[in-house]
Length: 324
Image (tube, rainbow, N blue to C red; front, side, top):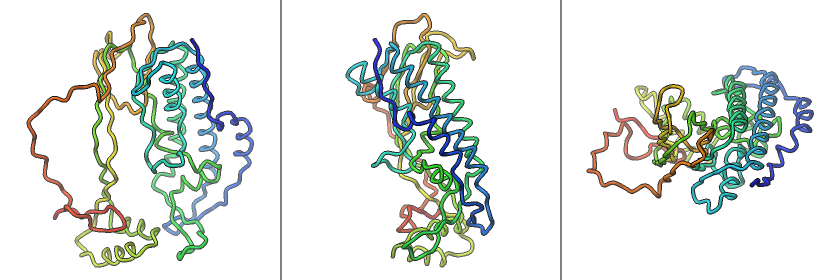
């Protein structure tokens, strides 16, 4: 049985977008936060080209999935048709939704078995993701100042990659989703067991870097925080920026045979549905999602001592001081 899946409108306009993106001019050079001129025009062309290639590869994969007859198991999907639809959504969603948080992307747990041609299309998507990320990497960590109307400060420091994306009319692009590769299994699985853990990300920044982040916030709390930074002793050179907790999804996979590297079991990050070539194996694997896995009572272990102070140091940003 085949299913019809409507592709995101942006994927249908690739040919028309190609011409418009290639003829979009970027105001260059622009001034970076370090008061040096940065020419973003060459990067714009490579990023626009890589993004178009990525979307074209995604469209070809979604077309194969939506018109093929494949067995899919997806968390909370009640029918096979809804499971296929969720897989297509997970693979094709690389833009922020209206209510999405920054630096967060869609998480979809599932497994789908496909034919060899569809696996090649999934590999082509991953290759396009790699090329697109390579095009964006030179701008990583570079921030530029752009004019801002109606603000107390005439300019605002923003990531250079965001300036380029806005220039090519793709300011809603979720880079995390665009970079994230599809997990392709090297052999048909017999059992897939998911686990979900909540963790947090801690980033070590210099005091000057934290001050730069505060310069983009206009509030009474930010003004007070800037004064607190100024009052720090010279011996305090770094602070910790703590991001909100995120889901760390893992899949423990047991293969039906050894893969090309001689492995019978693997554990991989699995925020997107796993995909594999069925080959001669037509029986789908047993899939255990986090809610299906029984919780085993284990003795509580004392957590390791934290390197951060218990209370945040600033009010306008989740910044903590390190324990001296």
